[in-house]
Figure 1 (cartoon, rainbow, N blue to C red):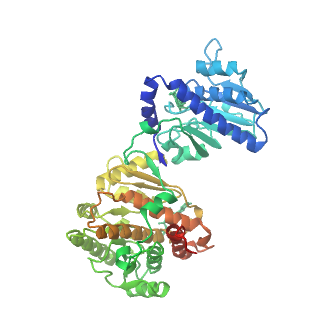
Figure 2 (figure 1 turned 90 degrees about the vertical axis):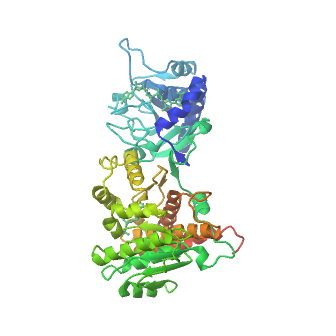
Figure 3 (figure 1 turned 45 degrees about the horizontal axis):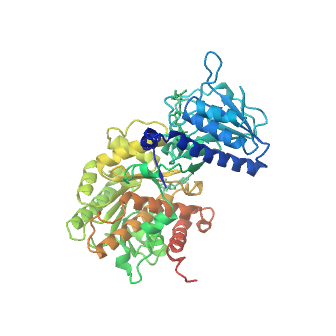
Amino acid sequence: MRAFTGTQVREAERPLLAAGQGPALMRRAAWGLAEHVAAVLRARGRVSGATVAALVGTGNNGGDALWALAFLRRRGVEAVAVPVVRDDDGAPRWHAEGAAALRAAEGRVADAVPARAAVVVDGILGTGARGALTLPAAARDLPAGAVVVACDVPSGADADTGGVAGEVLAAAHTVTFGAVKTGLLLGAGAAAAGRVHLVDIGLGPHLPPEPRTGLHGVDRAAVRRLHPAPAPDAHKYTRGVVGLAAGSQRYPGAAVLAVGGALGAGAGMAHLAGPAAAQDLVLAAHPAALASADGPEPDRADAWVVGPGLGADAEARARLERVLDAVSAAGREPAGAPAVVVDASALELVTAEQLTALAASGARVVLTPHAGEWARLRDRLPVAGAKDADAGGAGELERLRAWAAAHRVTVLLKGPRTLVAAPDGEAWLMRDGGPALGTAGTGDVLAGVLGAVLAADRARAVRAGGPSPAAGRPSTAALAAAAAWLHARAGTGPAAGRGAVADALPAAVGTVTAALWWEDDGRE
Ligand SMILES: NC(=O)C1=CN([C@@H]2O[C@H](COP(=O)(O)OP(=O)(O)OC[C@H]3O[C@@H](n4cnc5c(N)ncnc54)[C@H](O)[C@@H]3O)[C@@H](O)[C@H]2O)[C@@H](O)CC1
Ligand SMILES: Nc1ncnc2c1ncn2[C@@H]1O[C@H](COP(=O)(O)OP(=O)(O)O)[C@@H](O)[C@H]1O
């Protein structure tokens, strides 16, 4: 699934409208809307005899709602249209053909939503909305039991950004046309949209094809492609070696969690570079891991994870520098630079110059801040267009894109939903997971999972004859989204265990990864 801004969808519609297909598109959209409303009615009892009211605005969004009422009327529904704008002479200001269709179907017009309405369709505003909305009186006093179904976009939400500048009419369902709008997935718009249903109206061939436009969604099929099962002749080095500069005397546990994440996601080898306290704990928890002061030889690591539990002292800084040196040294070798995950403490330490050097080395670089780390990164390493703080939504996506582009790194922003943006603008949204993951240490596991996914990709590329990120290799942003999906699934599935989620998470990642890789291969 890929989501597009309302503006991109309007662009895609333009040639079809110019070719006179507007009315056909509208009827297709309205038919899909009517189908979903009928499904809501069926779930509540019956369709015929039920009352559906629509709040109808002045534009095509209102036109969709009027046509949908007309279709529903033909299925025995009592269809009531409530115009939200009237001209001085009292005549409703609305889509003339839609109104004619409703009249022909013997629908009614009223000034308020009847108390018996089982469903209220919100056809006030769609992608044509500009600026703040003040809800019309008829939208303020809806019957308590009525289910609100938004037509295309909840009125008041910006279809591009998910921002809500004024008031918004919250819906239980949004039936959207042509493509899912980014404003339905982000920020306040996502909260107001409820469940989103897509109706195909034939816009597909007209939507922008490039990966850097739109917002990609990640699912199981995508993750299977991005993090495939090891080849039958795989061995530990061809599956990917992850080096982890993690854990310190003060925070040794983070090393255990990060190494566990890497092993759970199927790394061929996970090798800790850390102090004795962290080494001991890691080996006690994961006998399969390696642990030493310096980690793998520079030419052995396919990916480095730096940061979990590193701390902020001079030693932490020196450990970060050692990893970055190893990466640039390896970048000069034929196999090319290993990937780097910059997480946790390393996000507080890394400098703009270091990011520039990493980008120049050709390494895949992913920074994994949570909201607090992200705010500090933007303060410490400011970028035009990434600074101003507004509430959530695609404003946030655009800031992420601007920052990623300026520093030429991929950024994975953690939180209740995970957003990934690449320097070229490619962006992914991962909405799996849940509050079960909101405990200390789960981010450390994610860093390890991401290290394993990136290491596997590099090892595959080296085996195939060259690590160049171009030709046929997945994008860094896609790999990061895949890692976030594995982590989220592990955190919410039955394998996650109860209570101390982070401790149980590496094993749960292993269960999810094994199911992803082996479940269809005919073995028990
Ligand atoms: N054009 C077409 O053929 C198609 C249109 N579609 C529908 O058309 C919608 C877009 O229609 P429109 O472009 O007519 O736009 P809208 O119906 O979203 O808005 C119509 C009018 O509302 C007013 N308005 C804008 N912002 C306002 C605010 N903040 N407060 C009060 N009034 C405001 C403006 O006068 C604007 O022109 C889509 O969301 C979709 O529902 C779909 O049926 C697909 C096909
Ligand atoms: N409410 C939530 N819903 C979904 N995912 C969540 C939620 N809260 C936290 N997470 C996920 O859990 C992880 C927490 O990471 P982080 O804040 O870095 O934890 P820590 O630093 O303690 O390891 C992230 O992957 C984040 O996306």
